[in-house]
Every structure is written in structure tokens, then in C-alpha cells.
Image 1 (cartoon, helix red, strand yellow):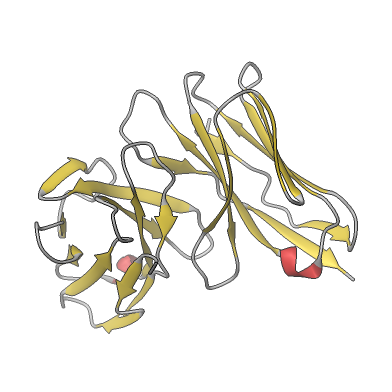
Image 2 (cartoon, each protein chain N blue to C red; image 1 turned 120 degrees about the vertical axis):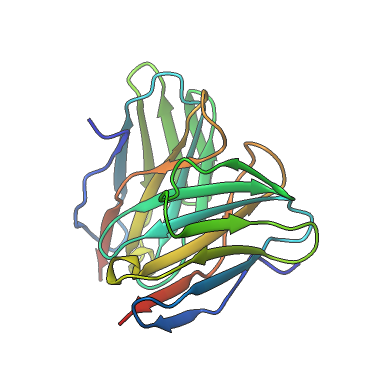
Length: 113
Length: 112
């Protein structure tokens, strides 16, 4: 049973470019969460999605960041016009249902030059 | 006050000893508590979950929860050098959605 998959594992972007991070949840999981981990800091919640719905985006910056989880395909976290401060590890987690254990993917490490 | 607090460490223990990791949280109505282990450069890996007051044991790991004191701990018995990692405490707040609030983690070093 494959775990949570994320790609790419490493992503380098120049300031002003767009970054697209993809997450495929564990088989059978329909709840997806995105977290960001800045260097030497803890994990911070960004957004919680179910298929075709954003449930909680209270941790998402108001500008440049968006997330989706379409009916078909992976969840996508999109960062427009990246800045150096966006450099971080972005982790996706999935769970079977509400309030169940969240399992994390390997993360995407974004570096903005 | 931070919502979830942990001592950043490092906590250094000799091989074979018991490592005790502590976490306090601010929201009295929190319901679900998790310990994750994160090796450097890797993703968080679930160690234990606990929902009720008392102790929960799984192999060398024991989680302890005291809701009255808003305190959750993780004990690692017979610590091994491979246990050296950062241990993250995470709390699921009842009134909110499913988001986890993480502490900044405690770095554990087990020396031979």
C-alpha cells in the first residue's frame, strides 16, 4: 500500500516564477493537509482539503498561495511569484477521515534563488 | 503563550537509558495528541497517538496524557542511537477543523 506521494522532491525557482507542488494521498484517503516547515522551525498548518472542497485555509497566506484537490488527480499547492521567504519544506499529509491520524509524505523542498 | 510548547533540547541520553520528552498545550478542550519523529531532512513519521488520560504503550514507547494539567509526554525505553531525531508533539484542537498544531520539537541525542 503506497504511502503519501509528493513531487517533485526538490524544486528550484527564481524569484517571480511559479511553483507547483503535487500530492497524491494514500490509497483510500480523501482528506489532504498541507504544512510548511521553514528552516529550523516547526511545522505550520496551511490548508485542509477534501475532494473538490477547501475545508480550512486559515494557515494559507492571503496572496500568491492557492490549493486545490480536484475530483481526479493529485492535490496541488500553487505559489505564484515566489519570493526567497517561500523557501521551505512543504509537506502533504493525508487521513482516512476527519480526525483520523495524518500520515505525511516525503515533502517538497523549495528553494527560491 | 504558544499553543503547543516543547523544550527544544538537545536532550542527551546514553544508550539504554530512558528518554523523557515533554509537551504542554494551551487549549483545555484539545482532544487528540500525537508524537511524530523527524530525522534531519526527512518527513515526520508517526510514533504514537493518544486520546484518553493515562498511559499508552507501544513497544519501547509510552505516551502519557494528563488533560487536567494539559501535559503530554513520550517515554522511550532502552534508547538507541537510531532514536536520535527531533520529536514533534502535535495537538488537534476540538473546536477547530482537523489541523494539527505542532510544537517546535525536541532534539534527542542518544550516545553510545
